[in-house]
Amino acid sequence: MNERDTAAAPERVEYAGAVYGSLLAASVVAGTAEGGPPSPGDLVTLLICTGVVFWMAHVYARLVSSGYPARPLAWDHVRVVARREWPLAQASFPPAVVTAFVSSLGGSPQMAVWAALCVSVASQVAWAVAAAVKTRSSTKVVVVSGVANLLLGLAIVALKTAVAKH
Image (cartoon, rainbow, N blue to C red; front, top):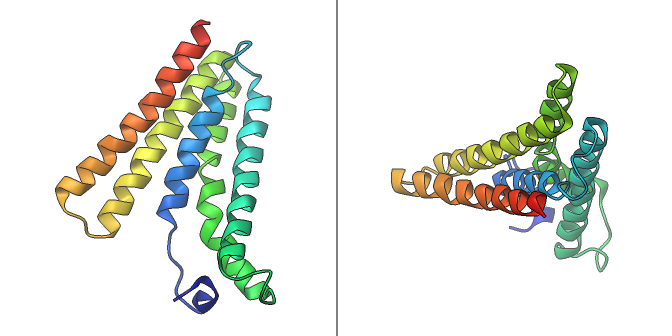
């Protein structure tokens, strides 16, 4: 069954997009280390805009891989693909909200950055574990999924720390 045949299919959560979006959000936050922490407003904007741009890119890639532009594009199909890929963009919302929240409580920009990074990594691990549980994977696979994604997230944290020191 291809993407075009799924227009009437029941909704499903796109865990891969959510995991990827969380890693993307962590990478965006980590990439802000050069030159000191950004303002919380700038970080919120950067997170949301990056999530939405990558979501649009993924929607486009799915549409192209399903036969467009060789076949006519149906708006129902675009909506299905866009909805399925939306978790990629949504993954940027929790770190953006935490950034705004920490800032509103008087936290420093650096504290807001670290809070956003922690939330991004925690979200990534949670989505990976949820995906493994949803597919009825063994306990071992659930644990490995969580640990593997934690290690990926910690690699981003390590890179941020290394860049911040230089």
